[in-house]
Image 1 (tube, rainbow, N blue to C red):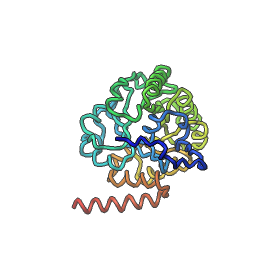
Image 2: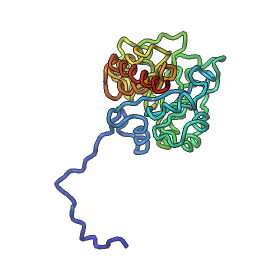
Image 3: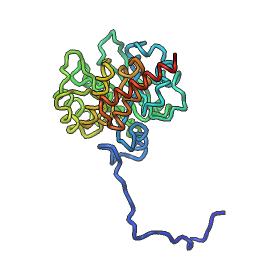
Image 4: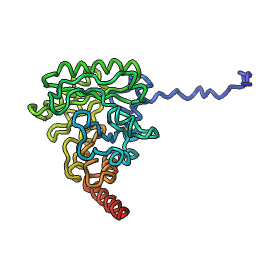
Length: 297
């Protein structure tokens, strides 16, 4: 039986103001509790950054090098990822439900690598997103592409659905072969995504004036790893991006195609969350790689 003596409550501490702490993530302070909670599954509340592990490539490429057997190549890496970016098919069939990090579902698709890639549709229902307990929905946005308006409309539809149910929307800026990947283009694409409601944006790092890209975008930016680089170069890419304001990285090939993926993802974590410099991170990678190789031999 609950105590019914309401007069016994005395410790009101009337001299202590109620604390209202701002949310740690850029542009997210006015969002609802549910979406903030989901964003906290993606971004580390202490560092304010994320290491997203992207392996959704198969949705248009099929079996990619390094992703032939996701159960063998990716699942061992999941404990080191803040967030997984993947398709619902892979999530259901291969990812252990005990994984406690954020889930970002690839939510647009349609054409394969054999077709015009910008002609995508929304490829999932909001009921399915909720059923799979996703923290965010990722949608490709082809600014300057043949089907630009359609892809932007895909994003705004998902923004509306996500806001209704407290789920974040990740706008992924896609750069076609005919477009110049420079700060001018990246500023345009990221700002359009933010203006039209994306909760956060994934884009490419550019060496010149990337800080202006971050400054002009009112929501968090995470950096795509892009094509496979030597490990030292990939770590430098991550370092430069976060030093200039990115809120983390969404790396795929630079992790799962590394000569030692489990060492690489841990080295990336040190850069993103601990601010260690590229050379120190590379030496850490080599140490873990050699340790891993010796344990296998």
